[in-house]
Length: 450
Ligand SMILES: *Cc1c(COP(=O)(O)O)cnc(C)c1O
Image (cartoon, rainbow, N blue to C red; front, side, top):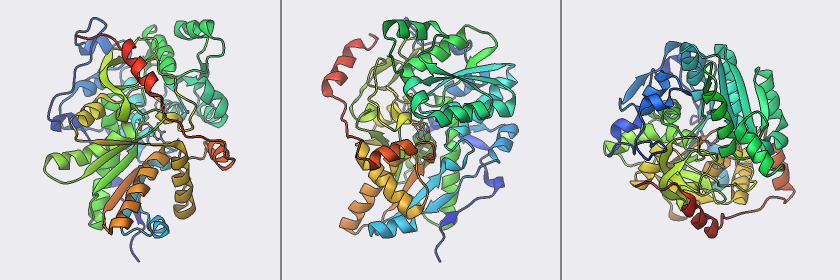
């Protein structure tokens, strides 16, 4: 029988993270301050420990993973890779389909890969509390868990719509000892201003970031932690791609195409970047970021400097953006609703080393249900985006007879998103393409940078 699960030993947990900056054709565009001039590392010191700031600006190819972090990773890493025999059979495709399953982490997604080192480095720096935001709750729960592991207090600003729609993610955070606030909240100036302007404000990730950053910047014992977008977050996520390369070696195969859902770009960067190193060395591999048509950052956004948050508290980053005041439609892939994208993913996409596609909501659920009915695992709505694009390619292979090797990152399970599946089965979900006018209008409000 051909192998279904491709497993590694704990000794195979990577000893180093891979930093893609070392292999980029051009250095990353600098982060700019409010005056439009590049900021130095010290500008980030009020909210991040120096060890993470050093990683944020590092150009070293390999960065050692601290032993305490590898030890915590052992709780669920290496994560399994699967060959999707049953999905292949259902599709009747000659393509070979593999997926890496990150839902085995205690919080159910890849985000724990970075919450653990972030908690570790903050603890080392003498920090007592972390303030952070969460959209659908995956990041907040991952940070709550890691805070508990390393003895940090965690305060989570949760986008109000998700706070109401996903009560069990809130319960997970509470179980792991975190305090959770619906954002906008009355805890911060940014939150109070939003509520005064509109008491029914349902919140957005950008606004929740403003609240958490404000709290972290105003207290010396408190730092901020971000679950995606930043270079150090993508760095930590490269454990996914590094393990996957070993797993492909074990079965003597190599992917022609890799797919991953893309919100801020962390699981996509994490799975894709280690393969980009091979591409830089001349290997053929296509790396495809998959986003929703309702939040088409890479496929239709502007490549420009923009703020990371609604209240314009963050420095300016060059990225694909729909505008910092983007108010996302209420789609069910909450983790894919951010207005911007990782600067590394953005630049590599701009330089055509990465690809991107957008898929409509109904197609993502259709793909997720087919996956659940063949492979068993019920995917997170975010993960369904990568699956949908992979299935499309597998069907193209069926039409052409090509025997490609396809690989996607199954970033998390959907056990706390069953309400979204219920609504899909009830016929209540819709496709939504973000309107062109809104994209053009956002251009007017982007910060002016020389
Ligand atoms: C947060 C999340 C995403 C999107 O975030 P990225 O930073 O783009 O990876 C995708 N899938 C799952 C399961 C998530 O929790």
